[in-house]
Length: 161
Image 1 (tube, rainbow, N blue to C red):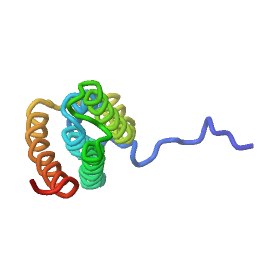
Image 2: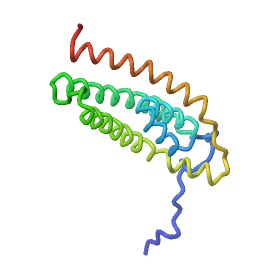
Image 3: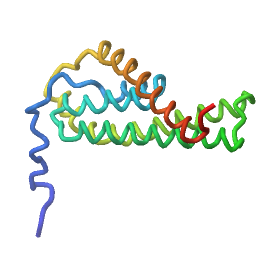
């Protein structure tokens, strides 16, 4: 008879080695809500490094920028095809809510991968790192990256004026 109660459930990922002042992923979710997917994605990517899961850092940045580009393309297509009228405040609000909802869903999916390691860091009494400076840097980077993405997508979808 196989008894799961007595079998070990810890894995090599349950070691606290490599965890260095991680950020609370749930706070990054709030930052994503207010400042967008690129900001949240950059912070979540670097949080993988702080959680000792550096192998996900580049992949998270690539996925975040790719999905932000897809959201931008869809937004410009909705506007270009006159499906959404940005002069109508209700439709503009609906568009903004949809973008934020998608951004939060994507960030939540990324956060699921970090929660176990973050809980391990909490149980090992590893202090949280300060998020102020990195958040400001991520916001500034997101403004430039998002502006570039939106500019390129606008030229491709709508065309040059």
